[in-house]
Length: 167
Image (cartoon, rainbow, N blue to C red; front, side, top):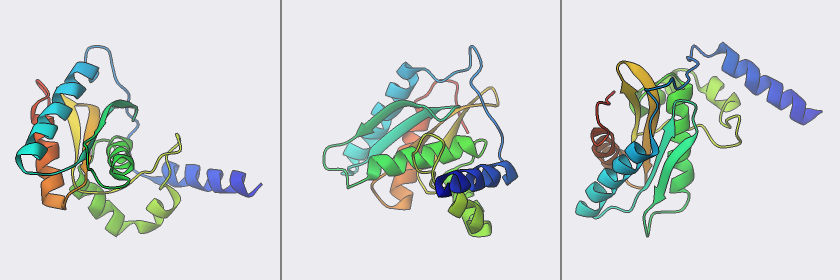
């Protein structure tokens, strides 16, 4: 019974959010090849800067397309990356900076919506960028394992590797 009440409260919190429902459309979806290119570019950036990071690329529905935890990446960084990427698409394509601002402005929502429908976390954090093509949200990239500036730079390197995509 308590579990049902908690689930209903979380669903209500999501319904109250001014977040946008998104879905991939034919011809605009983020491919696994693009996800692999992005993660490899981010990994090269991390290696060049002696960082050990985790990367997650999700599609517009929040499904993992590609994930990589570099050797030596800190505990739970993969979970953090997935939570940040999922939060970006669930929020209609917000960046990590925008998600953090939303968390500061509306912490009560995050208290009710910290776990997504698939059981994973939903986290505001640096190192998170939406992926758009032709103005349409097609996914998100998130990186965890270093400080905010380093996570952002590695995520930007990953985003820049996706052809015809951007914020």
